[in-house]
Image (cartoon, rainbow, N blue to C red; front, side, top):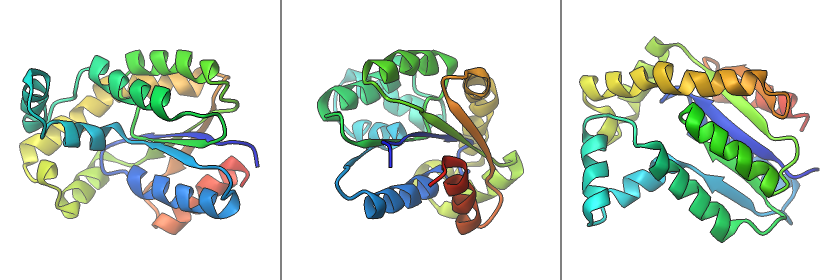
Length: 197
């Protein structure tokens, strides 16, 4: 199996974390000799905003209001991980990034640099109503307030959709649009078929 570079993108609550976890388990079983670099910037933000320091105090305010963290911080997180962790023989799985066209354009410069061939974007497409129900049901602290959930979902249309459109039209990426409103196993079967695994 060739090394996989897979970017999961979609609304908050679309199941990106679950599907990226299922893919990692599958890849580990099929190619145990290849480690997996898993990059989920949201988790890193949640960890960092507990740190002290002016930057993380400001990021905490953004988070508490349900806003989107600025592109430079997201890029700093994943580019730092690239520099530290990429050795050349691993699968790379991105969960929920890039979150804007600016971030997508920067990632466009990183993947060729690291000689990543045939990157695949998996757009887990779910309706806003479906996503709202999932977010409220998972019980995470930053999903509880209706106002915060509404803000988080609003930035999808404003910021993430342009990145999705970019990938949909860029022939250097394989673009898979998957119906996320199925059972997790059905979604994953569609993903495996789309990736020819």
